[in-house]
Image 1 (cartoon, helix red, strand yellow):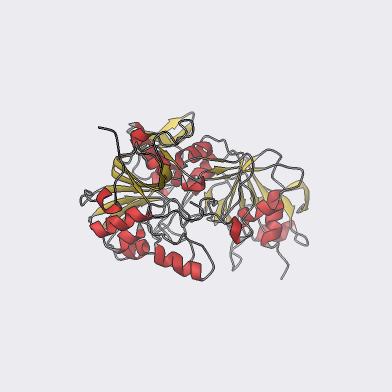
Image 2 (cartoon, chains in turn red, brown):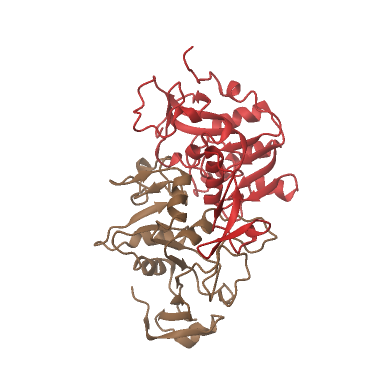
Length: 249
Length: 221
């Protein structure tokens, strides 16, 4: 039987996500690159006690729409991020580098849930977060990095000197599902991205037991230039096309 | 009250540190403004931690705004010949691996040893460092651009930082609205001061003892 990883709907693609899963979510702030349709499908599916791993898991469409109305940011028309799952009470923990609102004074759903004691946050520097995800994909259990030494993030971690400099031991993040966003895919799951929408998405591809890619377009096998494929098909399990193609991809 | 440099002037001073061919990463705020003041005879390659190298200037019209082309501050930027895209792991390999020649960040406090605190006012509060810890540790050279003192004129350049650290011994140069100060093994060297300010007046707003450079001059723009 021919390999075909294309799913007909976002709901089918996330139907088997169990309670308690660790979920990687791609994207970077309000710009493109967030798997908004997969997130909405997971909100409808209703899995609980999730751990979200994302650079900024907690902003949410409501906050960005408010900031957009005030002329501070612009968001894509069909935007949603991990905050939707936080708001729905599906999240028990967030592993991230930036849980706060991007605008001083404004509050996001994650900050509210943390203040209420309902969600726990594990702060990870952005580069260490990316590398902990990449390590999981590459079968590396842990690694040493100088990032975080002599800060509150060093507490409770093993340290070791390399070339006279202190490093901290950081562990791979073991995840169950990766929800990512790409520009084009073929039915094998090869992916290409567009511009800065690649961000955490290409790192997360293959870093969970199941990787699900939300893409703008599914093209016939052979159409993606093998020299230009960014994420090889081996890292991708499921592909779903977004409903329409709009300006800017 | 004596006049202090405004943000644009500080950004102009920051840009004087750019050298031809440098790869530069600019943090949110005053550092990002420095991109507007690149000398015409210099070609600077800007790095943004969300996965872009060599991008062009900020978008100036709605037609230029592309949701797939933003810098780490979330601003729309433009395409430029020579630019490249990559993922976050690659981007921080560039940072951690000391491939970024110069990084300019904002600061809350800098210590006399060059420790930086710029992400949190208290460890009891929820904070977020984003990429600041990686950038502070990884950049080949780190400049901090910040106001010299707090709104009520308490020093931000201290013997020891009181806010949670971003990284230890990482700052090379501090550019403030009053002075340019170099971090050296011997201590903080006052190299340039704002027009009409004296070394003594800058010292009053600085906790550690400043070493006044023999060639102390007015801030060069």
